[in-house]
Length: 150
Image 1 (spheres, helix red, strand yellow):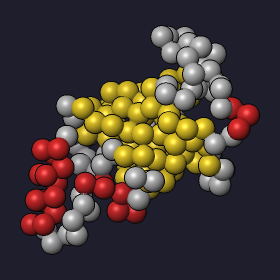
Image 2 (cartoon, one colour; image 1 turned 135 degrees about the horizontal axis):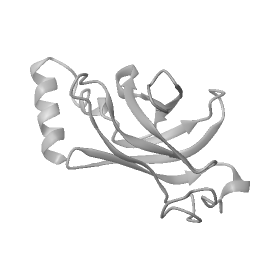
Image 3 (cartoon, one colour; image 1 turned 180 degrees about the vertical axis):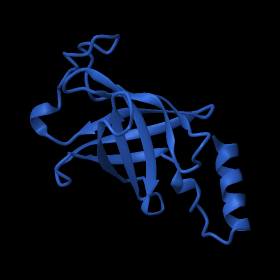
Image 4 (cartoon, one colour; image 1 turned 30 degrees about the vertical axis):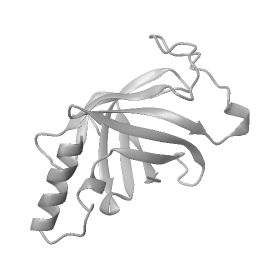
């Protein structure tokens, strides 16, 4: 990952962008998830990259009543695992057709145990991340906007 960040920094310098501008345009980092209502802060999720593949784990849940929540409805190896520390995004890669889009993986909704295809798109210079979970085509889904913390 360090090589890709250096390459992004050099590309940004060549384009006259401030340091880190392109690096912030990847989904890697710590994100505050916001509920579909656009107001309620739900959790902190860390997205990491290894070998060009992005994944994410829940680091913190803000609702005190859900601190010890488990993925009771999950049907795979995540069943009954604590939501804090749970892998909720897997297999996301840079889109070959759109350099500003990451897709090809899946996202888990720990509330219902279902997995969905996922697309991620950094917006506002990488300060926000549009996360769309869907079934079949992206038109059939819902989008949350996450806010970068780190």
